[in-house]
Image 1 (cartoon, one colour):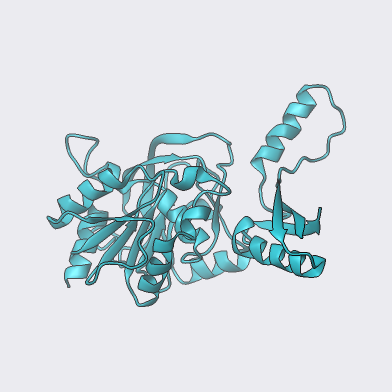
Image 2 (cartoon, chains in turn blue, purple):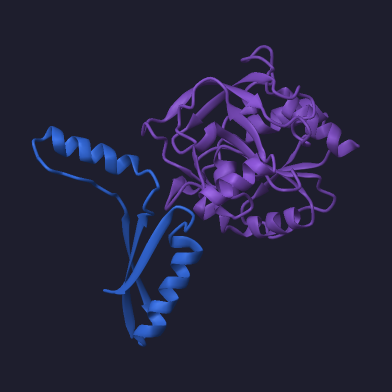
Length: 81
Length: 223
């Protein structure tokens, strides 16, 4: 059975996110008031042949640590989608 | 000096790098395709050239860092081998864990293609012996992700151990921490830098200010 993992990767707090800043300013330019902060990350959907949710999630976390995220600058979460 | 340049899909500065290495050493470097699993015997230097390996998919250098040839490069570095990474090559070295930190998107969000001035912070590495300590020279930058970042402990370690080899001396255009342009490993044999010294090795094409990087390494390896 295939389990779908949703891996979400974001720049860590304190790491400059210039894309987020640019979008924040653009939203202000469009007249959206009160936008405090925008952070840009990515979402990856990974289908794995593993029916056990705990094992599937552990696999996703290992994938994130080794490739999907750069833990020097990014944090990640892995969920069953 | 026996040198090899790793070529990944999307690497595009390997020929300029080969010209620079040949000009300094009199010997053509080998080209190593990313699928190679072993390095040729007797190699002195591995170079990771600039470009957009794997189309910068996921993160700049992330895919290349896990390609077959990089496992061999990692072993080579662990045995004390010399590895030079320029631009995308520097990004690959950080993604591969051979150098600390990461290269973020330029703070301005702009791709920067222009000359810059570098200061040589250490003239006692294999790559900088032909420069004067503290000297400045013109180099060329061409990158979208050259904003050097690391955590405060790593930064203190790099600065404390004198592992910042090059710093931007004119303007810190990409937003790098402490204007860092290039760093080295503790044994100074693995060097990564964002600007391109190989662009400045020919008096007919842009000057020769970058040539000492290559003559230094040739002499260090001959010694």
